[in-house]
Length: 378
Ligand code: ACO
Image 1 (cartoon, helix red, strand yellow):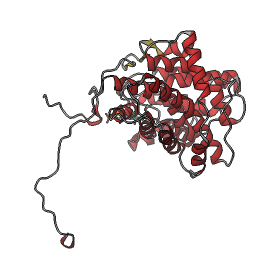
Image 2 (spheres, rainbow, N blue to C red):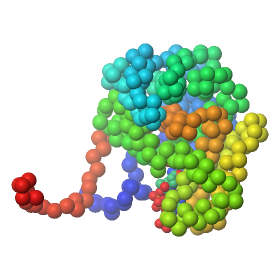
Image 3 (cartoon, protein in one colour):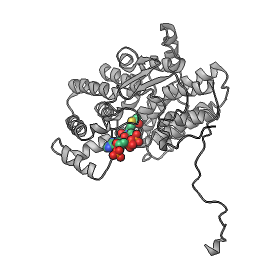
Image 4 (cartoon, rainbow, N blue to C red):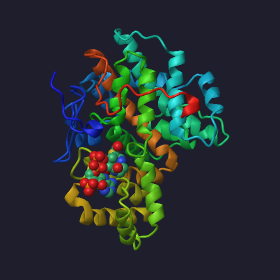
């Protein structure tokens, strides 16, 4: 066996062969199953895109209708899951609540028939259907309210916004939210997807696969960055303060949230689409002063850091979009998870197709034959 050079963060080391998505980080291209993200955002829906990611082809009208009907049927959560969630502390982070709830689904649907396509489909449907309901339920219950039942007459995105805000959303907001889900649905071998594949490779159940990926997505260097972008823009406070704030940040060698990417060395194509969606929302529902701050910061960062390939990533403008829709800041990452479940499930299914348990090696840097000193002599 050839011994490879150690690369911290496994940078550039392939962890799987995959036909699900493709990124060209130099040209800013993202494709799902060979289709450009811009085209899917324009013409497809999140559930249609999820079908494409998981089963490899765009569905026919009949296939899509059947898939949407199955998901609609499975949106409700068991009262015992709801009651379990009621016991979660209201101060807990919604990502922790989501991770615990996703894992809890495994208690109810634990059968592991991984070689049975009907089981795979059932698990896909249940996870895509129930995760939005669980995110919305935690939000209402932490405020002391009962969760709102899903509404069968509403589409996937509109129903989530309805369960969250208890109001039927404006059609433009619902469509934009659906596009946001499409944009976040999949992104090659990122940290949470890797985590999902490692967990999948042990042949555990899909609820454990998703729970482990949710835990990985929660970190501020991954999905958690969208929350931190809003905190950062609030801290900057005004357009005038952008450049002094940035100088100070760079002097302290702090990372600017929402910028930089392991793969993209140009502006993330999803950030460009999200910026456009944010502008549509501001036009219809009123301007947000934090957008002016964000634009100025993008200009200032480009002047200082473009030579390092540091440009806005997907998290930079998504927070401003969600904020305008009335989504609380600490739900931005759970919303990311609602979308990314599609990608995680596609990778789960692909991993099962050619499975070999992940078992990398390590370079041992410790000592040998060390004495085991009795406790009283230490
Ligand atoms: N702000 C300032 N400088 C940065 C930033 C940033 N956001 N990102 C990278 N750099 C600099 C680094 O300091 C480094 O400079 P150096 O060569 O002078 O030491 C250089 O650019 C390369 O950066 P790395 O940290 O090596 O890049 P890496 O690929 O390891 O990290 C990451 C990528 C984690 C996304 C990083 O850019 C970051 O922390 N960004 C902020 C957090 C963020 O927005 N995360 C969301 C990513 S998208 C997602 O997960 C959905």
